[in-house]
Image (cartoon, rainbow, N blue to C red; front, side, top):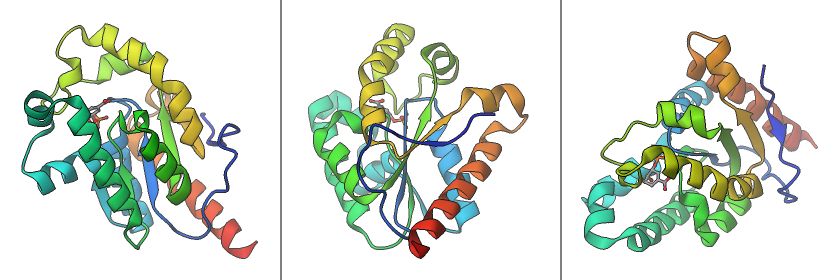
Length: 199
Ligand code: S3P
């Protein structure tokens, strides 16, 4: 079974006590479903960053890309993430898959959140990341795009992750893989928070 490990690359102190938990990873890795279940297990509020952006701006992700462009979407995404991570209270936040491409997001994630990377390889993600309305980047050759994005972003996910969870073994071993992932993460997070509070 996949183990959650502390990222050797982070080199920064994990925040003490219950703070925000941020799930990062590629489209199709399961951030939204695992995040919702994790929030329920920890009895904390859940925020999906894309949904929250749409709610606050009245513009869908596709409209952001098509009407304002990706750069404007990234700026709005960064403003939102900074705002979510500044709020008091230990929410669970599912970040958009591309949040880590913005340097200020990496900075604020490292400083303010316990970050979990749901890691998966490109072939797995291709089979799972459906072309949905909020994923305009997958409109063309989705397979090639996912392969490219995994290659470009893995180093960035690794840079900010406090914990890495390999999702594929859960899908091979469990009928309800996302439920298992959330349960395992809840344990890891409770344990880490308890250790930090007492140390
Ligand atoms: C994106 C991922 C999407 C959404 C947007 C861009 C990306 O979120 O933010 O389409 O760049 O990987 P999900 O990871 O929740 O699908």
